[in-house]
Image (cartoon, rainbow, N blue to C red; front, side, top):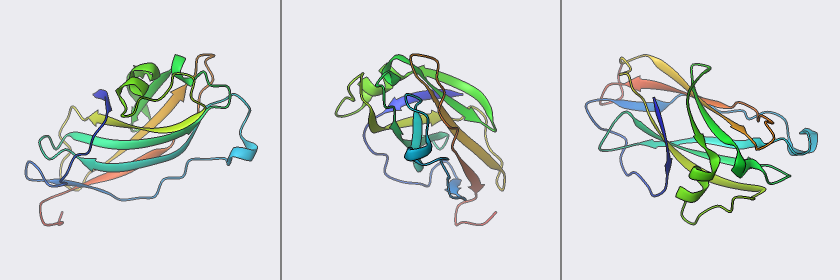
Length: 156
């Protein structure tokens, strides 16, 4: 499992003889008024698309808030099925964006590319989630997106 900071857009959804389609809506947790001060929060998580060149590369958008601005000193964790599979320093993710996100940002959004290491059989679902940990070790909520593998043409 790999996690890459990403900038730019991938164009198509069909590649390698299969398609992954988003099969659910993401709930990200408590609203900003009830969230603890200084703790990072993922406000929105979206599955954008898969790579036309590599069907196992999935692009996500993560919108965040961190009132004390120390998220850039922390880490981004990618989870698959509720288990952490990859981590990356948030500073690297921020630098890879176009335009770059300042290291002390208190809110923003970034794109990441997740590389799935194992093939997903047609009809199976995978749950991809993210957690942010700031410079003080405070952890965010853990939103996820469930994706289902479909054969070309949309059938199982």
